[in-house]
Image (tube, rainbow, N blue to C red; front, side, top):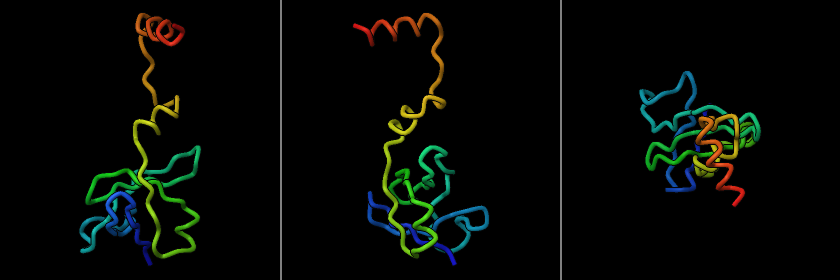
Length: 101
């Protein structure tokens, strides 16, 4: 039994993808991107609108239909400092100076 994710951005439905279910299954499949280790949310890509969706894994255990909440990828990456590129020393000084003034 697989869960069906409802994209809150475009209101369309698709099957939650994993290692065993892919686009060859005959039904629309939302691709699994992994999970956020800080929030525990699982991330999927909507097949129709391309939105990155956050899904509560506990909801997947209890419900067949699950809401996929679109997240702004730029916000999620910038909120996690481990995902940011480290600027070079000259760029770092300019960045710090701009933030101070």
